[in-house]
Amino acid sequence: MPTLHFKGKTFVQNHHLAIKYHQLVPNKELSLTIKISLHNNLL
Image 1 (spheres, rainbow, N blue to C red):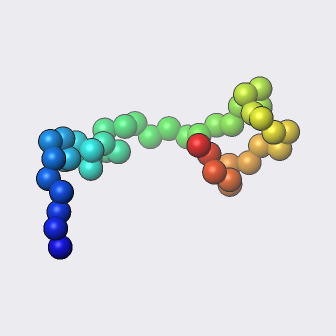
Image 2: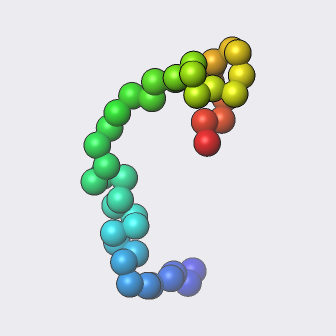
Image 3: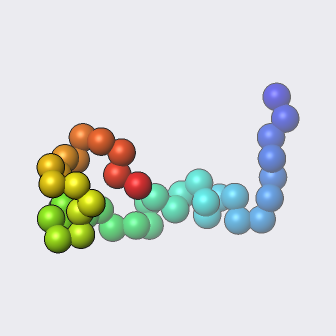
């Protein structure tokens, strides 16, 4: 199977290891809906 080799590929693959973990906390004031749920899409 062919693979792609490009500059920075290793950085992209390991980027998630460099980011600190933090809990996602909903903000009612910035929400577009009345009911806030963390079970739906969050983007």
